Length: 303
Ligand code: PAF
Image: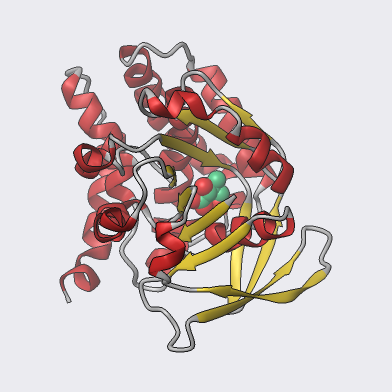
């Protein structure tokens, strides 16, 4: 397939490299493209093996026009601004796959993209950019894909395409389920690690138990009101498993705050709060974390 990866950050670069290895024609779209028109990327695999650098074409309108698939891996708050200017260059059948932390990232642009086959994706792979030209695959995970509109439902074959590149990938009939389960994990781990500037594993310590419980019982209520079957016990188990599996990792929000970058809080806890308000459910513990993160990022968002 002809694939353009929009936003070659850590996750975008990981997928770009693996899709290239699987034999696809991959190019990149970067908000700040190199003048040379190409970007070189090497991969450090999960087994700590460094695979050679590959040169990817960047920001080519021809590649956009020929794209069978656009994989959008920018941050949640960048989706609208990154995608809007590209749409006029795409063929109407180009499949758009949006893979972000959080939920609601495509809402603001939905009217403009709903005519393309639209897929939402969520992944638990860990990746980090060790420098501009190298991506390190830091944790094995799973990826879920599901349709966000009717024409997206015709794209179940994509699970095989993605699985062949970087397993495990599953197609799900209701993408809201994995998205909400991941949202619950992010609502706990991301703001807490960002506020305390600690690795994920610190949240396994006793003093964090009451706040994690309070956050998750609010989240379980909202998920119930959204029609999803879950329980506090199930969510606690899931969050605990991720805390343990990624104990040495620094969450994306912790890193955003440390580097004074805008966080994805509006699409993580902010989305939960929005849905809670809709259902008239009080979520005071989540609201408190939301306000703390908003206050922390205010100085660099304004400048
Ligand atoms: O955003 C992140 O950092 C990740 O989604 C997760 C799962 C919390 C692991 O660090």
